[in-house]
Image (tube, rainbow, N blue to C red):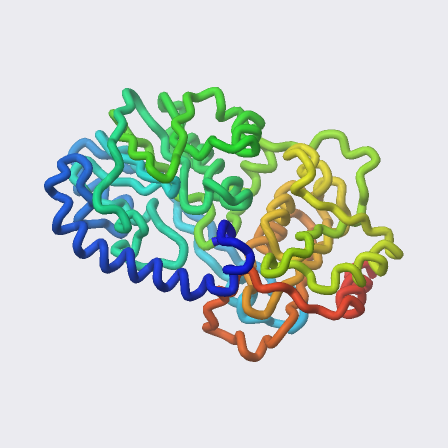
Length: 402
């Protein structure tokens, strides 16, 4: 979505509905007509769970940890108080982590869809944004699969939706799948990783976590790879709740470096291009924050290690909702956070990260017509700008500092 030109961002809710409808309608045709394509035929059926997938595939295996994680988190503080998005996020039961092993399985596209040798889509590990039915999956926008490449050996699927272009999803959804694999299958031999690896920042993170020691098979939009054995870890960040095990794995793999001289109070900017979730009155806000010792940070101008170190050093973080707040993963215990939202797009994913940081305090401010975006609202105006009175923001900062 964020790859749309900024002037088209307001049309995103309509674009998404059309995208789902096109997948649904074209899939009806594709599942009936692509059988002529042989091993490039679209999957004609799907399973709901990976356990079900394993039962239907000869020589497939499924290993699951004995217990999941019951998340019971206190309600976030902010204005308006008890916002329904945060209220719904206080309780979530994370399923036990698992790994599915498929002979002759196919990994598809940059979203890491998983198809068995018998042509079944494993929907549990092939989920996609905003869909609840496997028939709406965007793989059905194709008339057939891309040319299928062969991979000799065991190929682990790390790619998943959003991970090919989004910093948050690459960190929370892609990289920790390797941790799930190791925790469930131990030292099983892995000959390659199916993972987004085309950008410099992805390559940097793969190197920093040591995953580049494996052969990397780039997960791209038109990729299709059939492995002698496909290893498919469960998704490590269901519903963007930042489970404790996922956060701890990342904090261990990506430690902070030298924090000397880095600011203790930071404001994270998203710039001033319209329809990018910018803070509209940022020019008026920055001097008020500077009086309180804040330094304006633009994470896009920093290296990955510099971002990690900047957030690790910060005692207070003020920021509009955005992928840069993924770096809260590396914050030090006791960090204080003020997150800013437009009323039409409130998400609890960064608050969830903060809940796994000892002693962290997270608060929020929502600008705009909150009443028109009450319980059940789609919250799909993803790039709506944030129109908050700078003095209201500073008042919330002062409360946080106190």
